[in-house]
Every structure is written in C-alpha cells, then in structure tokens.
Image (cartoon, rainbow, N blue to C red; front, side):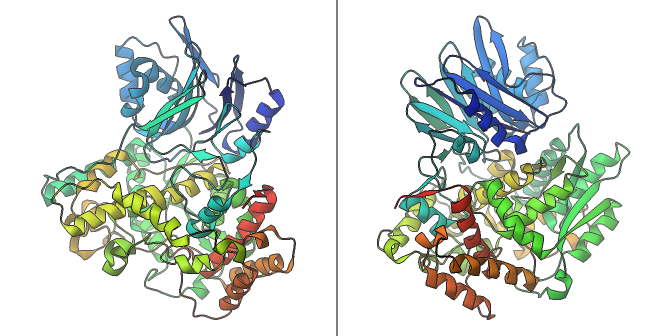
Length: 613
C-alpha cells in the first residue's frame, strides 16, 4: 500500500521543500521507498510499503511519443485477467505491479479502464502532452483521496495532512464544517471534510483536471442500480456463496505474511475459515488475531445489542480451524492515550476508542504480519444492523444510527445555535440520499425502504468504518483488506428481496445459510455482537478526567464552539447509569461521547484550526 500527493496548475512554481514536507507527511503510508517527479507545472509524490516492486515510483512510460506518469495507492484483485488482456493487445509489461497494470489499462482503454477494475484504488495519471490529470477512486472509497483547488492550483493527497503541508492550504473551520463535526460526526457528508475548501473525491468517481483552464470535471463511472431479481431462493443461496468465496479467495493472494482478524462473529469467522483452507495448502497454519480489554470479563454485562462476549466463540473457532491464534490485550490507559494518535491518523475527530483500539491492535498485529483480512462491511451489505430489522428504527425519518439531533445541537455554543438550522442541515442530507436511491417501479414498501437503508449505509455509515480501517491500520504500516466490500457482491445483494436476506427472521440469515458447512453451527448461528469495546469503568474515569481538564482551562479551543455547561452536564450524567442516548450507533455511548469531545479539542489544538464562524 502507498501514499500519494502532488500539485498541478498554471500558477505552479518549484517548491522542493514543500514537496518534501508533503512526502514526509505520508511516511506512515510508506517508508520502504518514495519519490517525487516534477515537470513544468506538476509535482507527483509517492510513498510505498512495497518492498518487492521493481518499478520506480512515481512511474513513467513513453507510449508512442507521449509521456504518461502515475502515482497510485491500491490493489487490483483481478489483475491476472487484465494483465492477460493487455498482453493480447501487445502491451509489454515490465513486472507484476498493480501500478503498472493500471497505467497500461489507461493507455489501452482511457477513462473506461476503471470499469474493468475489481479492487481498491486511488490514483492520478499525468498526460504531459495534454497537460491534464486523470483522477480515479475505487467503487466504495476503500482507499482515500482528498483535494483542494486554490490560487490556480489543484493540490491532492491520500491524507488531509499532505494537503495541509502545502503553504497555501489553511486548516479553516467555518459554521458549515462545525455543523458537520457536531451534528453528523464522526460521519460526514459524502465529498466533504471538516476543513473548509478541502474535499474528498467521491467513491466510484473519476475525471480530469485541465491545467489550461483550471477546470475539474468529475463524474460517476459506476452507480448502484436496481434490477429485477430472477433467482429463486436456492439459486440466491448458491450465488451468494460463490460471490463471497470468490472475493475472499482473490484477496488471499499476497507476497507478504497474511492473517485474519477474528472476533468469533459470523463475518470474520467466514473469512478465517476460507483463509485457513487456502493457507493450509501452502503447508503453513493460519494466524488469527483478536482484540480484548483488561478486566472486560469482570465488567461485561449482556445487553440487547451485545448478548454475549466474544472469548468463548473465538476459542471455538480456532479449535475448529487448528489455527495459530494471537490475542492482543489493551488496557484503559493506552486506549485513552491512543485517542490522540487516532486523530492524527484520521486528521479529524473520529470514533473515539473504537478508532484508538483498532490503531493499537494494528500496531501489535503488524509485528507478525503485513496483510490482514477483516469482516468489515458485511453488516451493511447483508442487513446485519438493528436498523434493518427493527421496524420502529427502520421506518423512522433520519439517519438510523443518530436519531438525536436536538441532543447533539444542545452542545453548540449559544452564539451558534441561531446560526445553524440543525434539523434542516441534517434532514436535507438524509433526504438527498434516499431520494437518489434507485428503486424499480412496483417494488413493495418494505423492499423499497430496505434499499434506501442500504444506500444510507453505503454512503454514510460504511464510509466512516472504511475510513477508520484504512487510517488506523495504515498508521502502523498494516494493509487491511475488506473482501465483503466487493462491488460484485453489493450489486447482487442490492436487488435480493428482504425476504431472502432475512431468512428465518435472522440478521444476515441469507449469508448464514449460504455459508453452511464452513463454520461450527454455534458460530454460524450466533446472534450478532458488535465490534468489541472496553467495559472497564477505568476508561470512563480517564476520559472524564481529560474532558474536565479541558473544561477547566479557559483557553481550550473547544470552548469557542461548544457549550461549557452542556459538557459539564455530560460529565455529571456519566456518574449515573441512566444515560440512554447513543452518539453514533451502539458503538458510541457515553464514554465514547466524552472521548469524542476530547478528540475535538485535541484536533483544534494540534492542527491549529482557524475558527471562522
């Protein structure tokens, strides 16, 4: 995996120190090799974790009399097919690099090359003769790409920090960006960031930046569209099994040590079982990794959303696989301190300890392997969350993971409450998403609503989790692959009726029946349990202390935008056990809400954010 950055434009001028700062900002995304390529009005920057690549980075080829240069972050899972097709068309490939194959595909098919790719990617190709960039991002935004246009320049990078390393790009927070952080965060409007003027290229988008007229033209090369589902239930089960196995098997190919995350839940267990069969053929045992927290066994209490702990299921699964298992234990102190590194990794406030735990977990996993497979995205695709199945939540107007606009708005400072129409801000984004959901005429009301829920999840909730996975893992040089997030699976599952997906009235019922025989029955039919988080009261005490210190310091930047009394009330509520309003789904309750405000204050300080309301 890699990091990319650069700048281009008519007002371009040589700035070697700036380019070096941008390159260094991406060191976490690649320390084995890096390079900077410059022409008259463009600088392309690449960092890489690929120790085995034989091509230079950035990579340039001459095609006829024309020069093409590429910087790329990503991986193609169907590159064998593309490579074979390119060779039939007389392309001479130097090696097996994804970067070279992507560039060669562009030379052959132009902008339509992205329609052939199955993988995760964000790349930029410079055409010297046309003086333009071609820019593209994968179907669901697994790999990041941020950009800004300022003073006649187009500046881009894998992470926001690479843009902020440019002297023309300032970290500015306006009223609209503040509303994103408080009313929607840690989610955000597709294409937006918490920094004024810095945008994210939308998933499944590609297009050109033309230097001559400083024009950026982007469009979707793929959209999720509804089609009639003609398979009966048995055929749907077989097709689902085939698609899932095919996606996982493609992503098991690696020239570096590979393992799997294993929570004892359905999704990670499926991946681990398939990986185990593949790796055993190579004569080595699979290595699985799980995360747990100090004293969680003492403090765990069963709930509607988390009916049982993971430990016994992880043990059952590893006994079934005869795999090598490594259990990583995190303590409350490091979890709280990790909140700050998590902000550095995201360049913005995130999912609190849900982020920091993955960051710390990835750091330990990296000591053993370089590539891990995760079960991320299966819940969004197969309808695993409560808001798919609970009719009262499913039919409620608004984002199902955040039905608390007034509560969130109560934290805004008094001078801001009148500036933001909070309900309009949130509901306009919600309404735009559901209104742009493709649904066939004649679809029954339940399936129509389910498709809207899928679209909401793909464009909002899943993006937050994919951001988390990429940033927290890459901060430690670990590549995490998400085989469920395959557009072939998602295209097919989108049109499958809810009656099939909800087989036997079980969350992810279709996936369960499709995977029969791969897992022990008590794992296959285990009730969904969310991502493991700490139940240790020490963590709540630590983050509460952090927030209290912020409140007590009159110079804390968060007090310019957040109501001090509301923060004090939040801490007072934490001492009781009757707090029921989640901040962002079941993963972010009161400890994570407190930690989120701690992250906001750190972000404002660390990034020297200029507040312009």
